[in-house]
Image (tube, rainbow, N blue to C red; front, side, top):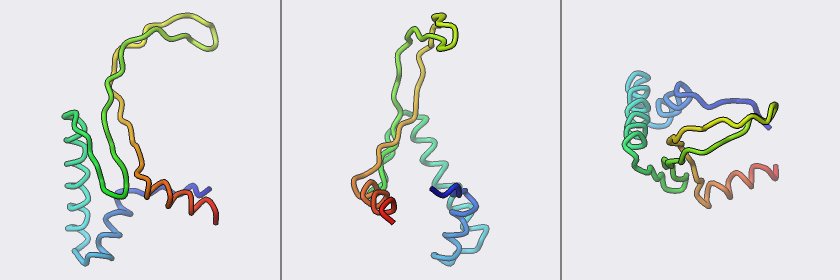
Length: 100
């Protein structure tokens, strides 16, 4: 499996090449889109990107956990977690990539 990580810079470079905006405009566009996605998630909204997947925020209740090394119980406070559920099209694309 590849160890390459897609970065903001890679995304803005792709927008620059594909759309034809300047590098600065491409970087600003990527930042704006990611900002809107982040703001929606912070507000508790789901973000659905067609043919890609859905990002959503889940509230997890407080619970008692255990330190696996000592077995000692420790309280885990309630928290919000980000989840991603890929679309069927994305799952199929990833699966096709695994067959190469």
